[in-house]
Image (cartoon, rainbow, N blue to C red; front, side, top):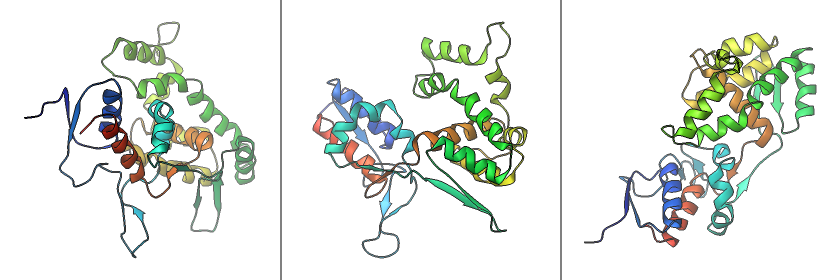
Length: 251
């Protein structure tokens, strides 16, 4: 009977990234999953007409595109079929009364658009981006950390506690709902309507505690990086990672 150093249950994207690191380090890895192909929520299927592929679950790969894993395995994954496509105008919203807007990866263009929609709101947009941008390195490092590690505790302490030992500005806003955060920074309803639904991608509703934090994360990400997609479907991320794991000795 064949044995492995590590057995991973479930073959979603996080499991595949874990296996890629382990096999690169020389460990033998087996991944066990109940589905007929790897990827978990990364599935691309012909749901309508033959030849027309649709992402059944995940559609955008922005967090993976911004991750340390993609930076480290970019060349290997590209060689195994993963190509990212992006747009400088990644998203927008259209209201029932005909008003509409789009966000771009050009910060100056977004400021001009927000001022067109509601004069003065660009200052609020700047405050939203500034409050999360000032701590973005720590936040994104924490999101990629083992939360039981000493480094994670150090990051959390730094984020939540100010130099005076009292709750930091970040901590005071951390539990705000998306509605409260947006209402306190913006007057116009079009940009609010554009931003609020993004928090649903984090599993929160716009009225829930902490949803304001995630709204900031998505707003910053959209302006910084757009919405990368996988050419051929989101499942190509899983396909390329699976090929990499196998090529490195995984099973």
